[in-house]
Structures are given as structure tokens and as C-alpha cells.
Length: 138
Image 1 (spheres, one colour):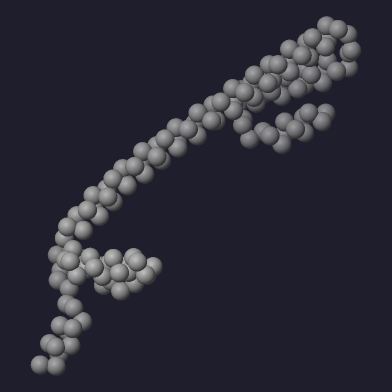
Image 2 (cartoon, helix red, strand yellow; image 1 turned 90 degrees about the vertical axis):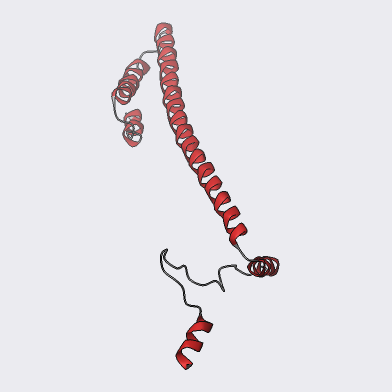
């Protein structure tokens, strides 16, 4: 009954194939009581069937995983293209001073966002700190 323990532990894949595997192990256990030549051939056939079943399960799982990974790769390529386009646009809109500051931060290993202003919601204007000080002192 050792085989039943193995089946119970690996019963995550429920369904007709799981039942077939349980039946196969039960039949194997029954045949192990007899040591005739025909019984050995039958056991060999059952083992071969079990291996084919395991192989088909593994191939199915691998194919499923490949499809998931292909979809993730496709999404990442699309995201990369979008970010490259955004990067190109931002480079064209940046002033030479901003580009020089960014290049200096990249060369020193600093984070380009460490001195950047927080993002401003679209449709609003941002008041720079230097302008705030001059407007309040006047």
C-alpha cells in the first residue's frame, strides 16, 4: 500500500488521469503478488503506460508555461517600446541645462529623481520655490 501513499501525496492533479494513475498502481500492487513471466510483462506494460501518462502531463504543463511566458514577453516588449518613445519625447522637450544636469547625475551615480520636482497633475501650473519666495516678499 506504499503506492497509495504516493498517490495521495501527489493528488494535486485531480481528474480522470489521476484516477487512472490510482487504478494503475492498484493493478501493479495486485500483480506483484504473482511472479509468473506473463505477470512481469503485464507489469512492464503498466509501467510504460504510467510513464507515458506522466510524460503527457509534463508536456502539457510545459506547454502551458511556455504560453504564459510568451504572453509576458509580448507585454514587456510593448511596455519597453512605450517607454522608449516616452524617453525620446522627454529628451526632445528637455532644455540643454536639464540634459546637462541629468548627464552629470548619471556620471556621478546619483539618482536623477533625487533633486527632481514632484510630478504636477496635468492641467495645473507649478510654482517654482524661487517664485514663491519672491511673490510672498513683495
